[in-house]
Image (cartoon, helix red, strand yellow):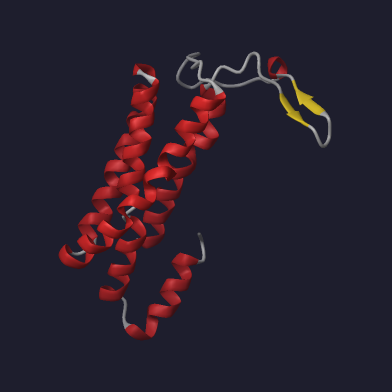
Amino acid sequence: MAFLMFTLTQMIRSNLYITIIAMVDSDHDTLTSDRHNTSIDHENITSYHALGDTKYHWSKYQKGLLLGAFYSVYWVTELPGAVLAQRFGGKLLLAGSVMMAGLLNLVFPTVCSWHYWAATAVRVIQGLLLGVTWPTMHSLSARWIPAHERGKFMVSYHGRS
């Protein structure tokens, strides 16, 4: 179950880094590498648009803000998450935060069509929600895993990150 939760949180964390390439209009952008002096012409790349041909006209600065919005607040809820998990238990906190972040992930394409700042707000909320996952898992491990198996378990779910 821990593996599934952390797989889902990793997918929610990193999906925008992959999908933003197809979401943003890059007709005038060229990817240039100074080291190899190569350039990619985006007109020659064929892409599949599952949700239509909607392209967003976000600047590099806006893309950077959107990509960083998750991690800029991720750390804020780690301490409150640990306190809540110790006080009330971690099962519902962990499941609820991952479920709500997943639901926000499902509506993210629609929110992007509303406004850029709405999309940024969704990423901020996802960061706040998923910031509780690590301390909550530590609390659950301390309560549910027998002492003689705790080391193996901790290595198994820390080893993947």
